[in-house]
Length: 430
Ligand code: DLL
Image (cartoon, rainbow, N blue to C red; front, side):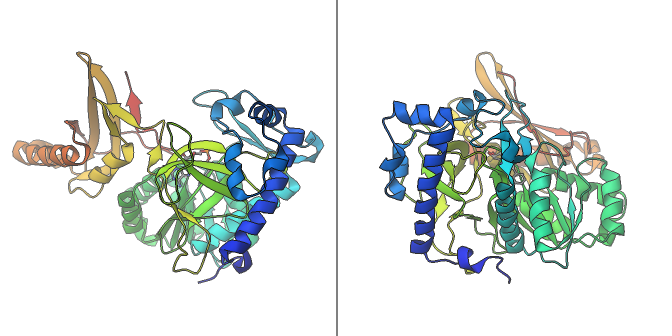
């Protein structure tokens, strides 16, 4: 299996750390000199760029939060003059002020290099025809993947998201072999292909999924429906977009582009750095960004770092599948619940489809968790005993995993909302 950049991806740890330290020193100095927010934060913490002598010294630098970044809207995080910026992306801003991301020409080169590595790790070659079903917009997903796939030499179908039936026709007619989408949109596409009776005519081999949390059960469902090898990749607008990390075909964690990003795990409550291998909040620092260097960004994503080299030969550290976001975690009657735990229980159950909705409310001063799932076969609505059996099984399985009583509502087939981008499955009415 091909490795895009063996020199970096299979480098000795000591060599990677040497590159990281050199780039970290440069990044800290660049941010300190050119971004008032970082200078102020460092001055308040009595830290100077010259205090960074080893990689561990990074913990002297204050953490950066989403809130800090929002306060710099739109361009106060830029460390270069606007004439050097050649692209601007932004987060959707659904939960507040959007966060903008500027790129120099060199940043775009680094971005496509990072994606080329991850897409190659997922099995993509210049023989492939890749359908990009992320939205081409301010969102980083489509343009990010596009740059790397072009570098590899794959033939790109820049279809963007939406217009789902047309997506299936194009996928079949153009002979797409790679699909790039969120897992939830990929599921919707598979369902639509099936409804159109065209699933067997689709020639996909590879799914490169990302941009939202999904479970192993969701991966299995996508692989089964599309007959693909599904790998996932991770990233965020604040840091660059996709390209931070991605899985190889062994699917044992996402390889981090460690020459471009320095990863730490901190305790989500205290912000203290945790020992390698412990689960906590991922904190990332850019090592190769010119336009917008980022120091110690709290991603809110919960994961664990894996240092052992992968069987694929890559030595770069891996991060486990994201368990959820610390701010997505629901506290139900004092119990911590990640939506991913619910997804794991639901997917793979006989008789129900893979779409679901979670509604949290408060009834009589008590938290109430409702899970809505679709029946696959509407005929079941006519058999009370079958329906009751299915209902009790799902409820019992959820109880075992969550240690909570959950209201399970079975709804008619194809009545729950489908998503063309990131799914929004949780409604918290409290
Ligand atoms: O979603 C960048 C991206 C695009 C990654 C395409 C991969 C593919 P944002 O819109 O800024 O950027 O959202 C970033 O999405 O903090 C995670 O919570 C979540 N996320 C992204 N990838 C994954 C993943 C893009 N593979 C936020 N697994 C991040 C779980 C993910 N969560």
